Length: 157
Image (cartoon, rainbow, N blue to C red):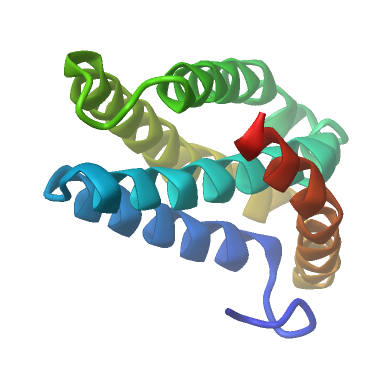
């Protein structure tokens, strides 16, 4: 993974989007134990990603009229994703509902990623300079590190 000192927040978020998309694609073809392992990776990656965005990226966007308007919808999409993750967590990979909910999760993530990368990123780039984006990237990485233990605990409860 890229180091916080060299990557701006947009590059970090985009890299994580690709990683999560890859995990979702691999999970589609997986069976039982393998599927469960992919789900655990997806659960952790999405919770760390959404949590760090909410702690670092969205508050920074709140500072600018041009980006503030995107926050409410993005947070609602995060809530939908988190709800699906929690519903999936209590199911077993061979439950009939599991594949349906995984498909719903994939659609929700794809929608969010598309909006974030096509609309939000360009608005952010118009408001923040490279130095600010790099600083936010560092804060984003730090926030993820702080959230890691809580996410690990949530996975087992």
